[in-house]
Length: 77
Image (spheres, rainbow, N blue to C red):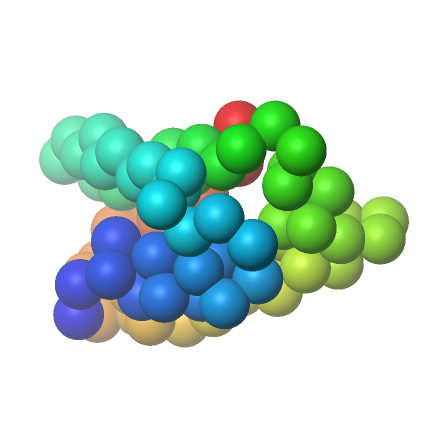
């Protein structure tokens, strides 16, 4: 599964300016880190109240990556 595409689809539905979304993938032998950058004014929409939306996004990505055998993290900047 393409984790970057999945993350982009999820976040695009949340923010008002999907053109400003940037996703960078950093991968090594044991882990994959997805760095998500959105517009400064839309950071609250992606994180949500008490981090609930960010936690839900991380849960979906973790479930989608179950077959990779690697630890996947999503870093929101």
